[in-house]
Amino acid sequence: MYIVGIVGRAYQNKDGQNIMQIHEATRKFLLDRDDVICIGILPTDDKDYLDIEMGKDDVISSKLDYVLDKCDAFIVPGGTYGYSFDEYVIRYAISHDKPLLAICLGFQIMCSMFAKERIKFDMTKRVNIDRHYGKASLYQHNVCIQEGTLLKDLLNSNEIRVNSVHHDVVDFEMNDLVVNAISDDGIIEGVEYPNKKFIMGVQWHPEYLKDDYSNKIACALIDFIK
Image (cartoon, rainbow, N blue to C red; front, top):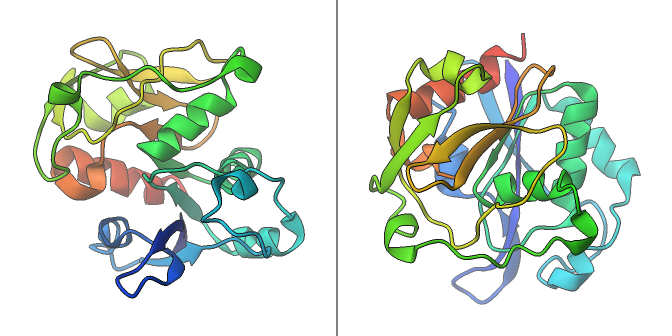
């Protein structure tokens, strides 16, 4: 049995309570397999993660490492705000060579971590909303899969159709990461970290589509544990 840790996101629930929770679609993404259980990865310190500025503080690793050590793979999902907590999980996955899939916001966080000029990084460029911000359940535009990448080997396709629910654009140079997918209007839609089992980020939301290509990505996350 494999344990996939999914990073939680901060919200207010219907009762107005501040909570950390896992997106339901992300939780269900891998559960078609009988060899996977999913757990939530939540902050182990006492910071208020609804306070975006507080969430950018350094992570206290002593308790968090205990949880991450138990996980075989990770998903850093979409959301509204990125924290040092997200970055810690990504760096842990890379340093321990455990498979990781970063989705939408998670993808943007991973890209920002490797920006060549990070001190100046500010993701303020916006996409064409008509083409890139739609319903997660609907296909929105095409993505060109780049030759010589792990994603191309997994999907065995030059182009796929994806959904799109994002405002911001990764349009800066990055160290280490390899671009593996570009939208048909020239926006970076996917990256991977070379020489690791499976460290990948995608701008779209495969957990909502559940089509053949999405299932291949989900299966790869688990298969590369072995």
